[in-house]
Length: 167
Picture 1 (cartoon, helix red, strand yellow):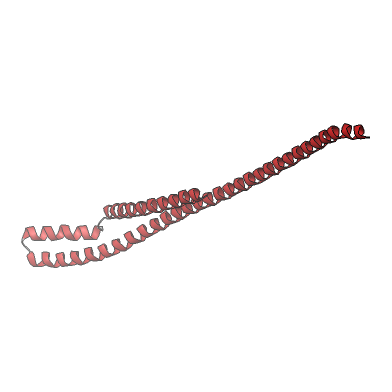
Picture 2: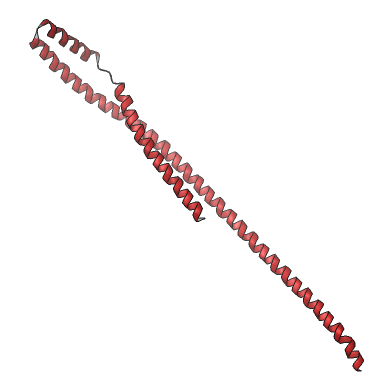
């Protein structure tokens, strides 16, 4: 039983380790994918294009003003995108955690079922062994009783004729 418990504990530890590695790789992958999908707004792209056009035309004051506007818009969009990315990643993490919890619950249920089954088999084996020992004891007592009767009969027969001779 101790061996089974050790195996069950080892299985749980392996599952926990697997879940941790799965979670870490999942988080990295989800962030990478979400960041790769981020696109700038049409307005920001137009401001950047306008900035380049003004700079090429030599209208640097207006180009700088447009650049500042574009930088502010890009910063705002970046913050918004990061918040959206974090929301998406958190939602996916929640799903992953739920799946992992279900897997852990299934493992625990299987361990409990196997433990119960093992205890049941142990109990049945114990009962069989006890019945076997009881049967062997009854057989030995019966053999002893038969042997005792046989020996007493022999003793009576051997002593019986001698008593009749003495008379």
